[in-house]
Amino acid sequence: MPIGARDGRVAPVLHSLSEVAEVIKAELRPDRRMVVGIVGAPGSGKSTIAAELVRLLEPNATVLPMDGFHLPQAELVRLGRRQRMGSPDTFDVGGFLSTVASIRGAFGSSGQHVTAPGFDRETEEPIPGALDISPEFPCVIVEGNYLLLDSGGWEATAGLLDASFFVEIDEDIRLQRLIARHERFGKTSTDARAWALGPDADNARIIEATAARADYRIALR
Image (cartoon, rainbow, N blue to C red):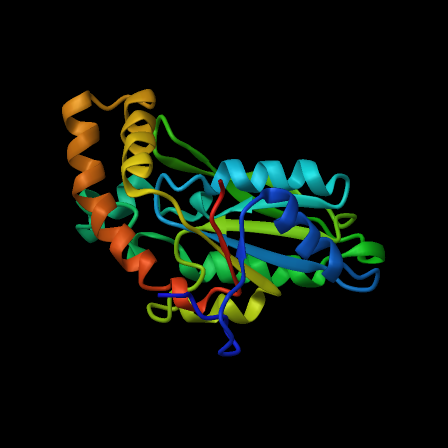
């Protein structure tokens, strides 16, 4: 079934990142900052796609990853959510929304830098103030899982995006990548597979259900 765009149209399918970059370039304006959302399930390649788009749009773009807004481990334990880290309610949604809103207004002659947290995958902890979004970039690419979710506070995100792209990928490839990533950052093969087929799979179903709200699909060949 075709994915629908936010205005009810069928979302166009883009088969290369060059096409995605051209769509973004066509919307860049000298008087405002464009905020683009890249959405997809864990292991779909969002981070790689965002980094490549920055290269293709150079020097006009930078990236804000959603991962930095994971709640700290101690807070997840306190809330009883550690065993489902990565779920929609295991992020600092308010902090994320506030940061994206600030980024929209911090452009050009404003001189305003916006700091944002990074994320250490080995410790699975956010790193406060690790990123600096400087004002000269006319495009900020936000990549994350729940940018199109319509509940839990995430529903405010769509209104902060000028365009959204949902990443489609073969499920077997996605799982292979995800398990390999978990192993690379310290999980045993057994634990990596269990997490990918457990909490990650639950989250992937939630994310897939938001695809119909995207403006474009990315289905790389």
